[in-house]
Length: 247
Image (cartoon, rainbow, N blue to C red; front, side, top):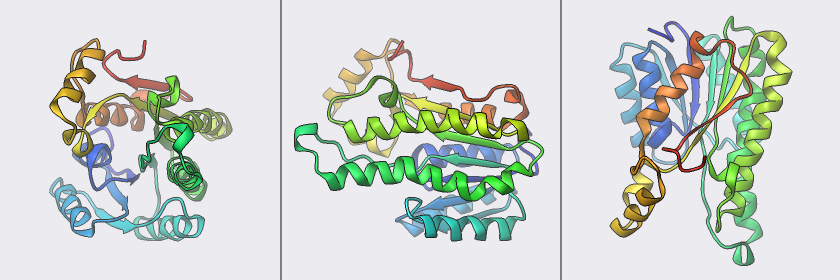
């Protein structure tokens, strides 16, 4: 198992891509601290699925955009698990609107969760991860942060900022043997995309060279690579997983 005896903190992990990453990490032997906000029953179900792999799993309800809440949660994780080796910043929200109609509240909310939330988790877990013999930070950004997207000024800006954060963290922590990389998904099949009209799905698939949406497990496979020794000499990289949509 690639991640045996390691502990991973994963934000936004009760559903979608975050859950897929948590399950794949657990399958590969990692203990999981699952950070979520919202549906506690959903989080408990995910916890039970993780424990089915024979690993330790705990859930923590936390607003990652809040400095104090993020700190207390990270402290609780370290106390419970003893140490942390891997942090995956997956938590994110969207508040799509054309720039001319976008409110300050919606712009701030997306930046606070998607970008500041990642900073908060990295900041509060950094000392523990620096002590790991193979510390890893993994940020889930988006191709929208690389190419921009109409109606997503806030989301694209937050994900572009996450790319800059990734490169900076990679440079600052390299001397400690800690790597920081990012994954930039394109259209991925999740609960969110499942609700799209069939006509929209067809338009999306037509715009992707591979002619389909990606699967959350495909993102999770890349996350395992970044979290393991297989990527030990890779840092500061952003890898797109978008079926060739943005080449």
